[in-house]
Length: 152
Image (cartoon, rainbow, N blue to C red; front, side, top):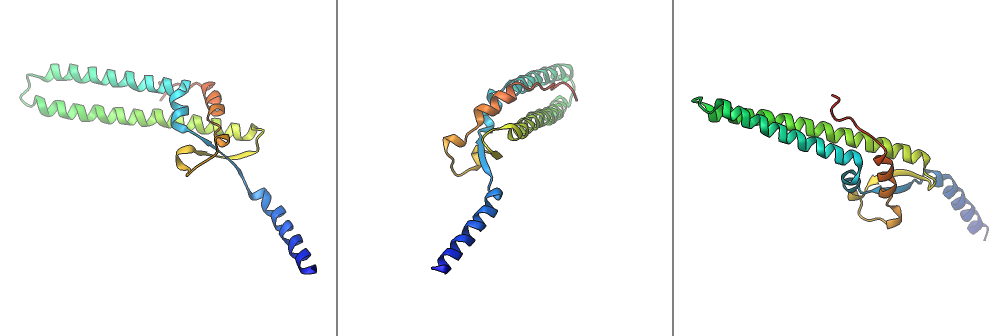
């Protein structure tokens, strides 16, 4: 009987020590939050406008060089250059939105009343309870952010 009491006390002590190490975890549907957010929509509009601008630049270039004997090669080179510019700018805009999302989540973790200390992307989990999804709360906070995509 003493052994059972000693083991019980020992187990309770181990649980008390280990409890602070356990983290409350929440999930965020990153794609949905970004797509629905003001910064996400602004970023999408920025890259859409950039794409249109680059397409117009290519059309002007093609018309300007259409009489050249190597017009097709020049057009292909210009297309590759514009594709690279678009990809770099798309990556920059995506990084700005993701940085802001990380900042919003970090601030939310500091102020949440749920005891959440870890937030993971929902698509990386094998499963979670709907109660663990804080996407709506994060979306509200992200909507308050403004990102200047024209600043380089």
